[in-house]
Length: 126
Length: 352
Ligand code: HEM
Image (cartoon, rainbow over all chains, first blue to last red; front, side, top):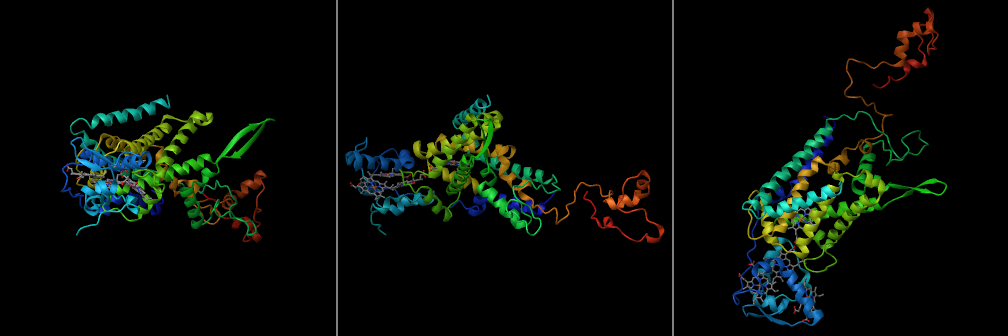
């Protein structure tokens, strides 16, 4: 073996980088998000699995439809729950707390939607 | 064939993953067992390969350089292309690793009327190669949001910058476009340029298809066929905290993505992709051209064979040489001036 004085430190750096998530987390998986269930309503605007995975695309579809195509602002689910197709006065009417609902998941998944630059989040009751 | 077979291989792997997630236990096989095997094969294989290279001596400096080496004080040395010091080499390595400097010198030969051969600079390969590698790096670093809880703060800046276009939700990442665009360019380049096509083998196309497969499944997941990211993060964080479990209905597209990534990791150390480690061990890049200041001894020399300089050789055979009429540096000593030493006696012993 030659040049081990340079190769071994290089390999240690390599293994250190590859194992970054292991030593960064230190064996602690952290808290799993528990979004608060709405008290007022029984069902969401769509199937719950669909909402979990695709709610951001649904919001964009609403926005495009309403703002650009002049689509309807109210709608109803197959089971007849009426709702506003709106971020502020739709989602946030049932999911009354941004902190206890949207943010729990988003902090976990490390996303920061910029919607709230303009849209107003409901007042947090503490 | 050299294009078709690797393509079919990647398609076959996708189908295997697609079927795999449907059989009972298949999800934990692809989601838990395979990732552990893959990361072990990747790190183990990588270290093994590098140590294998470390076993081969590179005794002498290889000054295949593109610049003037150290010489007389009034001849200007090209400190970057023909470095003679550690820091010069470090500079050359850094530029090579971070900016692909030797690829920047890529040229294109063309024949003009005459016939005349002309060489022109050709920067496309360099530009697209660099784009591909940096996009890949940014994507891999961004993926750390799935493996760390909470995510380190500096990654927010990266995500913000990458999604700065604020197109759609989830936000469009610039690197996603660049990655796929660059891969397609690199693939088409191999098909279209006759001389490159001629030397391209199946193992040149396979990594391109594999990474393209990973990129496309990732992009499909993010923008088109959504998957449960919270569930995936629980699995990913579970993997790195050694408590993996698959929760909920994640979506088979994710397992295809992960399966291809694992294959890439396993394939990596045993393929040309090892240039990731190899670039640091390139003898023409990492050796200072200091043969004139430092003596380099070949490690496999037999220690019993001691250096034998020409002066010593002449001392040994002078009589016979003079007898045979071969010119000598130092004439046969007349008894009276035997102590006088000619200039040749001071010559440095030859290397080896
Ligand atoms: C060689 C390594 C990998 C490459 C090149 C790669 C590539 C990609 C790309 C290009 C995307 C599109 C979105 C983005 O750019 O973030 C993506 C998304 C994704 N990848 Fe990977 N990936 C890799 C490894 C992994 C691994 C190991 C996992 C396992 C946890 C994973 C899970 C995901 C998930 C869940 C998404 C969707 C993210 C979202 O919806 O925002 N990837 N991948």
